[in-house]
Length: 237
Ligand SMILES: [Zn+2]
Image (cartoon, rainbow, N blue to C red; front, top):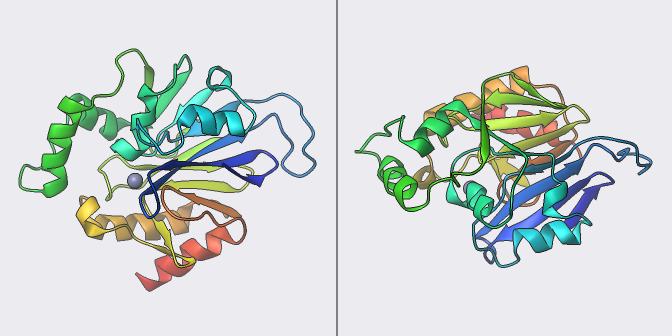
């Protein structure tokens, strides 16, 4: 666990680096500048694997919370290093996931058989389905969920979503990764359509509000000038 701001924590999940997988907690009840407490929602963004080097519950506890205090879970996409943790804690709050990702997970969207990740997802959704008991809500482009705006950013997965919190924090999932202090596009072998990834990066840089903190699914978050990093990558593509 690493505290990134008064109200924001990085949960260090996954396996040993470079196979780490990030999740984040953000507490709207805390003033990000003064740390004073008022009222507001506690949101978990992504959940890591089902089995991590440190458990999701222990990372949540290290931030000072318990799983049953979470008011909502936002998922950037349906991959096992982001949704597996849904099986590791008891969940009684709404869970949000891109509409196409829900179809992908539930078998209503058929990924291409000829594509390596399509084959993988066809197996994964049978072997590792989403928990049946969760209160799942579908998300579409530019939808507001509390203080977050969702942006459809397909490519890594067909229904990948980025969530931007109005206090200036972007949860970028696997649209981009951090490597050597810069943002990069994800590895092609782990993505459906790299051309679409590049288009999504450019489109997000044009239409999302500026943000200071950039939180990625993999690599180290940027606690300042987050939007500049995204803009620089978009200019290179
Ligand atoms: Zn990932």
